[in-house]
Length: 427
Image 1 (cartoon, rainbow, N blue to C red):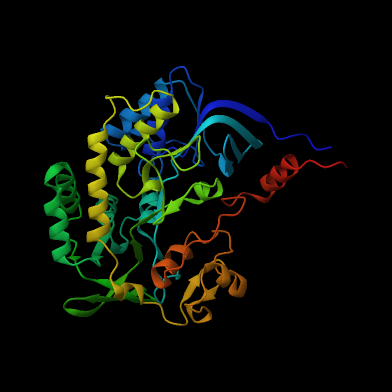
Image 2 (image 1 turned 90 degrees about the horizontal axis):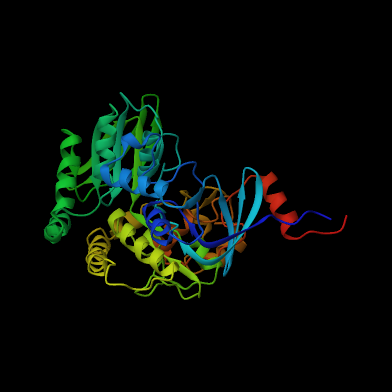
């Protein structure tokens, strides 16, 4: 008979070691056995991704220091495959392991939203956040001509990071109009620090041309690199570059919440004022509950951690600050809403599902995601619809189908071990 999957006791398991997860773990610690899980080697998540803490800002360094000082067990390189009330199953380099916590905090963050256009799968075309991650991990972009295009506040910090890394920025295209950007900026009077950050990033980006109401129409590969057709208010422009990074905002990562039976609405985990989901014993914090940035994630994490520790809603928790960040999140969604033009860039021959090589012409808008899987396998590849799912929702309004086990790709050897130890049989 196969040996049973190793089990570990914990009072609180926090899934995701970004700002929300770190804050939740620190807040829950102190007399509680807290385990913080993440698939990365180091805590920090995408926004605080680093090789050395010295490369991070003061706030990130403070929180990472707090994490070290608290009695939190951080487990890196742990991929969570299954979540249900009172149980978290994951795979690690040492094999499969199950945690049996009293409370689970989902701090699973968000991922980029890609919108397909002709040529978006070519070598040299990648995500804005993906480019940022590569630079943070030490990738060399010095001397490369880089064009950024898409929507949302992430464009400016990535432009600044590219410039700092020695790249030649040939342009930054934002699909939102100048009027919407001005309205968004005017609403930041409550938090001038965000305006100062934007100004600092814009200064670091140098003389890079920042175009509003502009987007990529198509891209082609040439002997000299990439040739990009850019729609602008002044008409169509053709720009040559070595790398094109696109991204149309972020979408919450809700797979584990769906798997655990938590309600999800409008693409985000449903929570109450105490960060509790609709499933008892499971809380959620950060971008998985709505896109609001690192500051909002930290506040939600602190509240979720306090609730997980059994301290309840005390007067010490920053509830008013959370409300302010919720207003900011609503403004993000309103002013950077996708234009109809960028939703309709794909042609019938454009690949929609990269994993299964499914083209737009193979899909019927009347189907829905489940029927599309049956007919074309769209969304059934290794990414499990994490790339094409949000794109198809933007194009056709299709809701994401249920999350299957395992929730995330794992090496076949680990998955086999996971299956054998989960369902031991007589040999």
